[in-house]
Length: 226
Length: 99
Image (cartoon, rainbow over all chains, first blue to last red; front, side, top):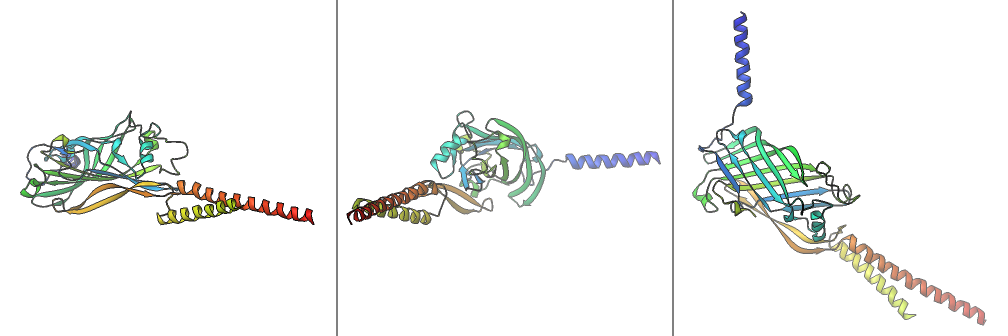
């Protein structure tokens, strides 16, 4: 009786642990680990942001995006890499405000020229769509977000679409294609961005909404993205 | 005296035209010099719509510039009105002294 109980418990524990640590496979015929390099040949890499404050709501963009990440088709959770955006490429529609944005009061582009996200792993990976040559998954990208010289652990929700190389994709660029989309919010205070006194909360939102769309290829050169 | 009258009219003209232009430009609080133009096109490879953003030069007068201009216009009108009033009062005093 006791042995049967222990056996049941052990089996249950093993089943539970295998569910927790199960590696998600990419449902496409890709065998090796792939390094995806961002490339504007595949699609326009773009970061949009929105600041909402009582005095003004403004949208901005940044297109100086580069980086790469590796995708292990047999273990999507093991995806890792680094994406970075240059502060100098940020635009908000007012040249003077762009200059202020880069100044030491705000993002201090001279000391901290890039904003980066180092992806350590993916979690909660779910395959949401799949066909013969394309698969889409949703996940949380776990990593370190660095802005204004301050690094914080963050989990960003992502949607990743993997497309196998085909005559159609080769018209744009060689290799398999990957598109990653993410939408998240960052708090300026968390990254020690204080601005000029009284501006955050009146002219600039305390939190900034960010939308990112990344395009890459497994055969792109790193110079592909701006 | 004609100079002050002219200043008054000029003030009104500046204030009214600035307010009109500000409203015509969308009534923004801060002056903008670029406009974000989003080009959307369907992407059959990923099955989504992809966006390309372009910043085009586009001047939009904001209250930060329009406000001081309107204030200056109103100020000019008030100055002209005050000078004319003073002149009129001075004239009537002179008339009173004469009578």
